[in-house]
Length: 172
Image 1: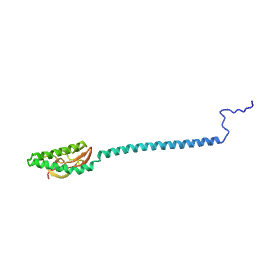
Image 2: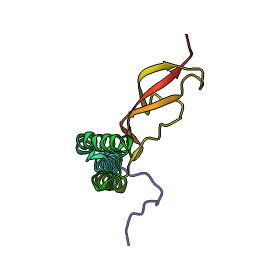
Image 3: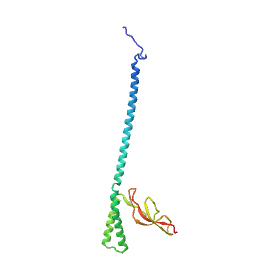
Image 4: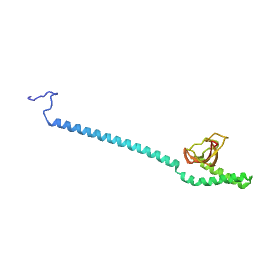
């Protein structure tokens, strides 16, 4: 048997093998780069989907705001009608009917998480109230709401319409 044997740890004699190793390294680096790009793209797409879902939920939460803003003057007129009738001492069935419609209207708004802003005897908050006028007085400290001229409303946690109020100020 005349076989030539080479030691197993001897370097290959072939020059092409180092070139092949270098090519494999470059391809492995490209593979890693493309894998990173794919993972980054996947993460960006998942973030996009989450952001889009949040935006759709916010949109659904407040989608009826323009309609409610158009209906609030009707509620204001119902409030005025009931207040005027009670001030005149009228308690007849017509006043009771208008008061029931007003109550039904407020219940419907509440079901959709639209609530009145409580402004009576509160400190003025420019985020919730719109000061229509200031009235000098010694009876309460400055910056307190003396009278609510028009009710304000919240849609969930967002102000739909600020309450129009008269605010106390220091006497001159």
